[in-house]
Length: 264
Image (cartoon, rainbow, N blue to C red; front, side):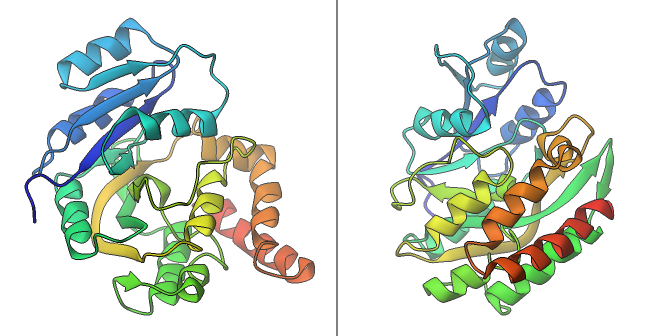
């Protein structure tokens, strides 16, 4: 694996998250270090102090906050690296995340995206299997058919047509792959939409199976809020209609919703 792999972490920081330090600490502790950037339009002494403590380069955007899609798009252009992991500020990246990701990039340098295995973090408790995680795992197996690389458009779309099987915080994207930017009118499924467009581009999707990061689940998270508000159901239906007739899409959206209500 090249020591100079063109990869960076960018943390889209919003407000004074109580979890930001744990995220930055995990990025600074990588066994194969990559540069760390913080992108924010809500600067604060806390964010600046944590950036200095963990050796992260802080970029402050002067335009007013306009939502998660806008934050992610700003973060993508913050670092000059060809490959970027948008490290979610609530989440924790295990020590070999960057090593696993860069090894996958070295194996498939023309990939559109690389994703890793992931679990959940509730408080300080790790959850390796929940109804939602089980659904994601099954969808990944259907998409990848037991392999670590899928190349055809049909295979990449198969990964996404029964639900979003790509765990967003584990994803590293190749910025010049031609998939565009995140839609700023979506609040929850902007990643699913982006990966669907990425599936249309040349280049494979790559999966590093090893569990390499933990997605934090808490009541104030965007995902939890979206489920409670009903926004998730609306955006899920919209995405399923990209793949299926309306009646089938509605049925799949209802089934998909059960995995969230069951504690995913």
